[in-house]
Length: 259
Image 1 (tube, helix red, strand yellow):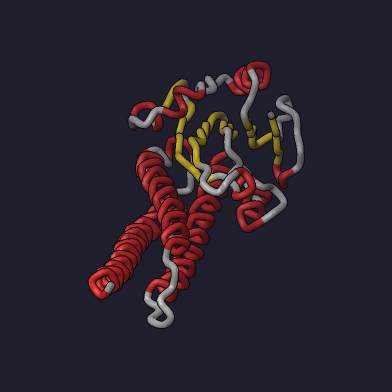
Image 2: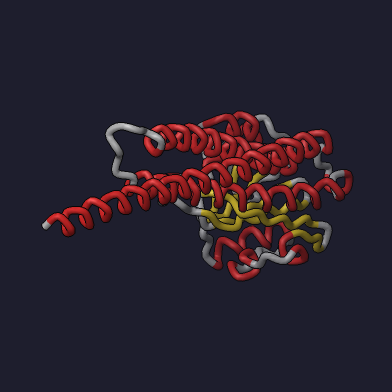
């Protein structure tokens, strides 16, 4: 699907001189050709976007800037969905290529949408989307923190002894989400480091990039702390389960001796 937006978030065509953002979601060849003809860029293939090496994710080609980050998709796509999203800044426009639907891309909803509506260049749209992605990750980590705290109350409940199997499943889901968030934050950190070095060349606001770098660094440290906490809770739950099983075996042994 190809979506073209002009200033103010209004729909536009590829030939519209006011068009700022060309959004390709799971595009077909015809849609890719439209964008390539309009802006003179090469749309990376799915295999190229999935590459992890720096040279394949961050580079310049024919005066266009290519950036690829791993972002999380919407919850309605599945509990744990992440994938590469490519951003191409060329001729004052932005092209995005993706197969997932991050919340930051929802025009008309949320905080990122307001920034997209006030964007004047493709670089402004790029920063709005990156800021929206970072805010979404911050929300997910805050939710994971609350869920981990609630689960810890169950794990360390003393009387009666709880069944911790469900707690282990919950902790597993929380840990998976935190790990995906940490992977996305690491990807954003690398992207922003490269972007910071080419800001002036592509008219990207260096001050906003610097602020994003600081925010992403703080979130990455938080994700590391949360992963350690979840790992501790999993070990504690397994230890308590082992202790309960040991007590049960002792009781059975005593009963057997008595009989």
